[in-house]
Length: 165
Image: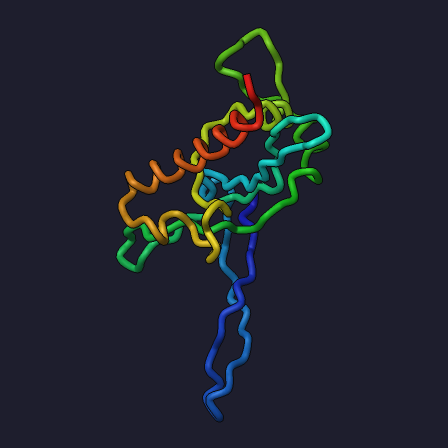
């Protein structure tokens, strides 16, 4: 595939009066080389009518790695977000390799709906009034992973506390 040119709006000083103007800088973006992983945005919803807690995928974003001038890795940033319900029909048309079951054929849509992907929580709205990523308020990477696990535990405990045995 051909590299895609992505416009990047950057503030550029106007030399005469110090005013800011928008300048478009074209950066090449090759999805085959640049995208290594994806962010998936989800909602966890409790349906009162069916008394069921379920997870709904809202969007998918390919991540692009950002490097410093010396070539060292700095961070990742989403290139764009795509609304997942708009992608479902496309994902249903293409098969994915299923390493767990060679005899069964599975589409990308089935893979996402059955949550057959590995993930970790990087941001949550639980006790997060400033809408920060976990890495912004927990600096240690191991503790950030544990904070993501704590969010999973809170969701699990919420569901368990709905029932009395």
